[in-house]
Image (cartoon, rainbow, N blue to C red; front, side, top):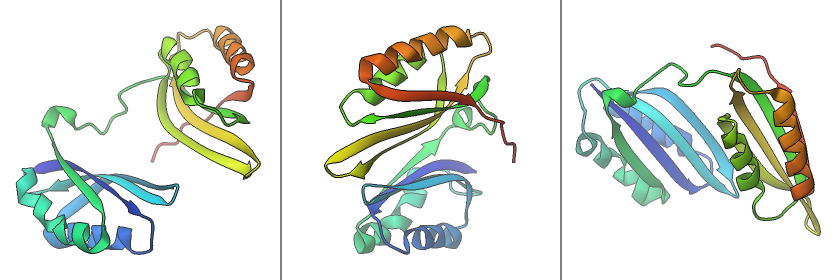
Length: 181
């Protein structure tokens, strides 16, 4: 049995998911986990797939050559070792949403992420986007993050307040209820 990560990147258009999943279905791969998004017109998808009989990249990779050629997609396959496969969350903590809004400028992601890392906050999802009028763009960053139980929330709020002033942005932090599927 082989577990793989499959990443797909290319100019967004209808049919990418259908074609990638068709190839996976035809060769007998099961999709165990997936996520996709569109970033500035580029479609990006990453999947964890499993095949009951094929366990090496050369046994699977060639089946995607027609998609690479015909659809202009960049497709990368990586075999996962048993130690890399886990269905359990590797980190515990209180789930939160951290929202950052402000004038677009370099360093917003780095500065916020750096400060969160000091508290060992685990960022589990991140979305960034520039919205607003062309003459007045607004940078939006939404983070989902697990905050360790041991973190003093008042101290973290004070740190985020310092970052708010340093970057001249708005930052909000709120807990979310975890959803188990």
